[in-house]
Image (cartoon, rainbow, N blue to C red; front, side, top):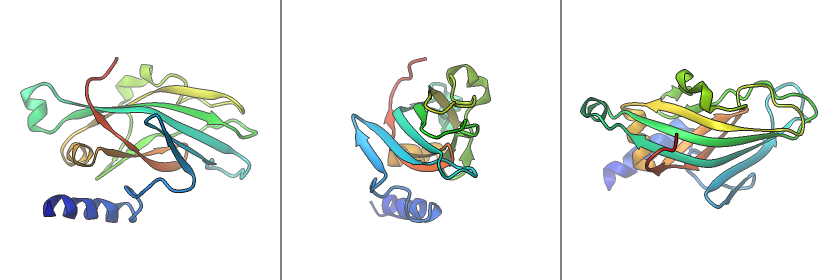
Length: 166
């Protein structure tokens, strides 16, 4: 118990103390989805973005070598809606953990329209796949939380351990 608390405090410190604390004001949770409505990054303050996490599933490695290296794949199904007046060009997704993890470039076919510019009033959706190992995987499995950066905004969402649908 003391070790888990020490790990949690270390993680919270790495994220400025706000990583795993409640989903106050701008977040809403419903049906397991995490949503955030907020201004988008960029020069225009009138841009707003809604990010909705439909699911986040962590699948541990099946091979002995992969298990020995704590390898896993985090698959995050996301929808991004551009409520602004100009194209959203920089969704720039990342998993923020012990280190910054970018989506697997070999899994671009699952990202759908997320990595293309999103027109005003349009919604883009897809599945982001993050390949993790070592301390990143251990942190995800011990906290069952993932801290994501999408469209310039950072938020936490729950993670399920399970099988991935393609």
